[in-house]
Structures are given as C-alpha cells and as structure tokens.
Length: 371
Ligand SMILES: Cc1cc2nc3c(=O)[nH]c(=O)nc-3n(C[C@H](O)[C@H](O)[C@H](O)COP(=O)(O)O)c2cc1C
Image (cartoon, rainbow, N blue to C red; front, side, top):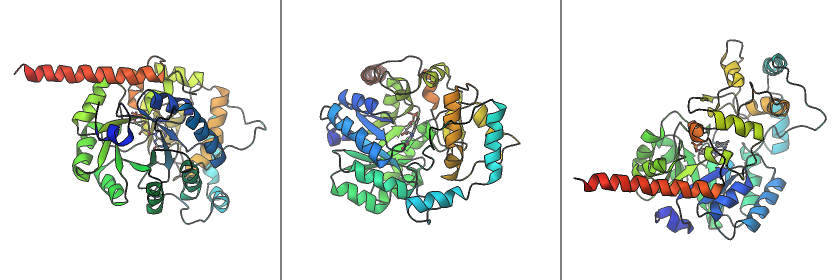
C-alpha cells in the first residue's frame, strides 16, 4: 500500500499506533506500521532506557515518540521544573484535597504505604517536556508528536535539524492551521471518539474539515474511533493519508495493561466512556465510573486546571489501582473500547486492520462497478 506517509517513513501500512508500552511500539513497527511511544509517564532517565530497548527490538524499522507540551497550562510562567513543582503544589486548594480523601474513604480505599511519592507533575509542562525531547532526539526516531497544541517553534526546529518529522494532534480546524504555521509536518485530526484528551467534534466531521483547512501540502492522519479496517477505509475516504490509533493497543498481548484494567476494557461497550476533566483538568475521554460521576456530582469542587488536577489526584489513582476498587478505577480509552473484546498479538491487529480495509475497498469498488 502506498500513501504519502508510507513513502515518507518507508513503512508498509499507514497505521500509527500510540502506546505507553515499548513492547507494543516495537511490535507495531516490526509488523509494518509505525509505533509511537508516549513519553509522558517517564522521567528522562526512564525514557532513555525505554528508547534504548526499542532501538534493540524494533528491527531497524522506524518509530516515533510523543510528548505532551501543552500550549496553555497553569504556572507556565513559573520557571524551572524544581521550582515549578513546589509552587504548583501550593496552588492546590484544601477543599479539593478533602474531596478526594472523602471519596476514597467512602469506597474503603487504603492509604499508600511507604512506596514513595508518585510522579505528580509528569511531562505535561514545557519545563518537564523539554528534557524528554532532548532524550528522544538522541535516538534514531523518525517522528516527534506533540499533544495539546503546537509544540514550541524551537522544538520543531530542533526536530527538523535531526531529520525528524513533527506531528501535532488537533481537534479542530483552527488549531490544525496554527500547528502548520508553527512548522508541524503532520496533523493528527483527532475526533471526539478518541481516548485521552479530546475535543468535541466527531472524526467523521473533523477529518475533511482539517484536510481542507491545512491544504494539500500537509499530511493528515485520521484519529478517534479507529479500530477496524472499515474505519481505516473511512479515514482514507475522508481525505487522510493514514490513521493514528491509541485505544486498541491497550488490550493487545504485548501491552503492559494490568489484568484487572484489561478485563474491564474487554467488557466495556462503546457507551461506557465519558469526556471528563477529572483526570488532568482538560477534557479527556475515559471509562465512566464512580470516579468520573463523583466529579460531576453536586458535592464536587470542580476539577482544577492542568497540571494541578493530575497533581491532586495522582496518588489517589495509584491507591485506587492498587486496592483493586472496581467502582472508582478509570482509565483513558475511546469509544472503540466497545469493539475491543479479544486479546490478540499487535501484529495480528495490524494485519486484520489491513485485510478488512482491503475488503471494504473491494466492496465499494464493486458498488461503483455495478453502475
Ligand atoms: C490510554 C491513552 C493515553 C493517551 N495518552 C496520550 C498522550 O500522552 N499523548 C498523546 O498525544 N495522545 C494520547 N492519547 C491519544 C492517542 O494518541 C490517540 O490520538 C487516540 O487514542 C486515538 O483515538 P482512539 O483511542 O479512538 O484510537 C492517549 C490515548 C489513550 C487511549
């Protein structure tokens, strides 16, 4: 199969797989697609280890790295990472801390032991995202992606100086145009169906809008709700050069998704997700559970702006996951979760996407030929 992205990256299939799991990234790239590692959860030292592992296991195939450097966040003017963390922590209201503690107590979730503090701030500020970019550019990556707005112009320039293509996620046409102005090469037009941070326009409406807005010279990937070959065909029919997927890799063999979480995903239907600000402060699609409902309830103090909300709740999430509380536990996932009913190797998922894509195209060709 040949599209602009298969040519650009030397890949067999125009299928991009976002995952926080290195095994999935390497497996998809080896299968002929392109794995993209989400760097968010890794310190620069950990990221170095993950990328070195991928370098050894990807069989010389191209892969990418995804960082989260939001264009707007609370405390953007507060200096370097160490200073930033303390200053931000002082901005979290007691009322919010009490709400979280009361919610966990209501569900009998135990406090953390002495396993140490979690990674409250993660990569989603400029100060914490940049060291990740520096590590990523020391590896033979083919693509640097950024979520939540255009990456800083100097980061785009650094990537280009290393011969690395830059992709940006966009959930509306105006943002897509801004990304192109900032030098981004590839726009991931991500519809509201998607897992994780997402806008409110559906993939079906968004992709042609973005394709038209950015013009012929910019490559567009369709994202959000893609988990079957028919959806790949739909994305291509809407004008995209390829597809960008996330949720479906959470339940493949290689994924490091904890078993309890995986079982919950396998059981969920396409109606079991909600767009909620209760995870990071920005709307993100995730499983609808007692956690998301509590943040919508009358008692809720309302989520804090990014990055304060995740700083507030990161230890609570660890406690919930450790306790195995089935009611509160939630994770980012898209509406395609309703089709994720079986655990398969990542390579099989890639091949099934492509074979169903071919069937869909043949079906359409047959319809046209019948005229
Ligand atoms: C568990 C999960 C975590 C995600 N985290 C990120 C992230 O850190 N950075 C990012 O650019 N996109 C992130 N996304 C969004 C994906 O890159 C992708 O755009 C989205 O999953 C596509 O929609 P789909 O879930 O319907 O396949 C995440 C998605 C999921 C499911």
